[in-house]
Image (cartoon, rainbow, N blue to C red; front, side, top):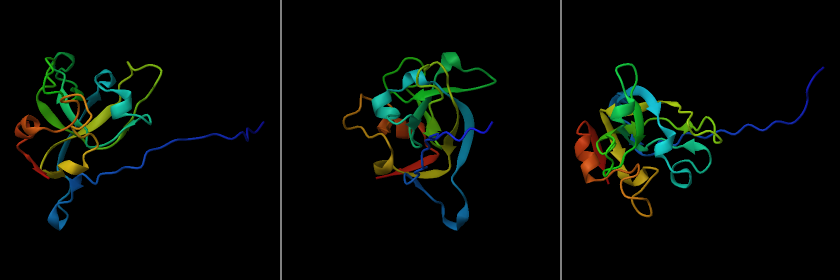
Length: 151
């Protein structure tokens, strides 16, 4: 029997206006794969529609990472779990796998080097955000010397 019931599929359109293309078609820098720990995010700030936008500033959760995979969370300059050091930016948006079970963490690509980033276009800005939660500050910029940040 054929099922012709109506289904709805949601998706997110990628918005990388925060990333400035390199002249001569060099590309968008250097990325590494990892896992995003959803528990470090706040639904209203980081994924109000179920998707985490690209450009979120990330730090490594040292206790959860090992030689086989790196676990990232929202950069937080006051964190004591390793996220106090900015490690890169979320390169592509990612869907939260299960909004009912936030222990399921998605795989991600992290922009680590050789890029030009426009700070004013990043998805999380400091105003109205808990201190150090996924936005870039002066310390985060110092942690990422191979990424050039412009206003």
